[in-house]
Image (tube, rainbow, N blue to C red; front, side, top):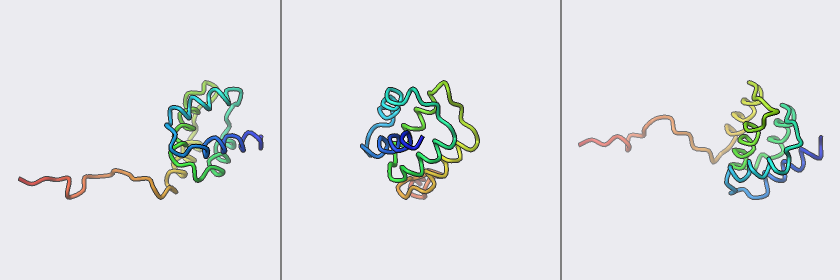
Length: 102
């Protein structure tokens, strides 16, 4: 399993600005023989901490995999991953400048 983690991580780190859909399709072609486990997901995310948005493609690949169903744990791994990102902007409410007064 270590070699699978290594290859998944390398793919996520290869092209940091790659479109998530392309990443998902590529992972489907390259890793369709893999049955994802919670441990595989956690370790891949930990090894790929600099991969940024390509992790969205990893998530899409997992979600489209008929051999896989997210659990509370696997979803929390993604929430934790994106929570650690410094470049992630969350839109929570309008800023004062979004509220125009006439």
